[in-house]
Length: 321
Image (tube, rainbow, N blue to C red; front, side, top):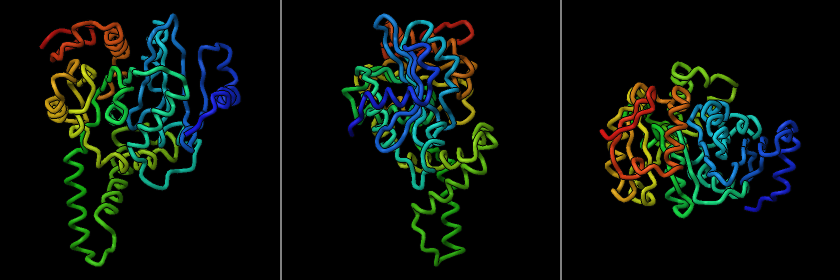
């Protein structure tokens, strides 16, 4: 994949003329792997590290505003972008006609960071689905994986949803024995039913444009077979910073616990339980998320000993459990 850096800069300039009022901040579309990704990039000051924020399933770049402001104010570089199926990227490309594979998302991230000329190893922060993409990136490109900050990450397809889908397939086979669809085709069909009927109830933002539910459907279809827990043993040394919300309303804590147990001791940086927090830590506690990320980037020893920690986002206190 060949990307012209000059073409990249021109694309930014044409699409977001106002971004050049502050030349250290760029925003616009860049062509990566036969698609246009929407990207926002604020360059670091004084050789500070750059942080790459990777969206959750229903996220877009705007959802990182609070955390991003704290990071850039402190001089850190920040990259936010909409993956295939998300936000401005979804609206700037043909509607996806097939599952968006998690491996393609990881490869797009690799190509994007190369085009931005950001040096590896990378500081990657991912929420939920974005955490799963980071896990895939880290095992596909271990030499490029630096700090991996996973906030309530996708680690396996939810068993409750898997069971519901399997029950629907069994019922379909019984009622329509001549149905020619394969189990995989029926699984993707019922994933669409789940996305279109349940996501609007849980996430009103999934209705913010007419195509978002289709984007969500295609992303879920493309990651459902991925089991990061099976690749946990390949994570780089002292790379995994795992944040778990005490009040996660979507994913049971035992799923995260199982993932942590599968991570080798040498790969563990820390497991931190965040009190009072629901699934979307960056939105509910952006200041805490900033302080935690800053601590990782600053190399605070407490965050690199492989311990289990408890964090109070109201007081900013983090201590061993």
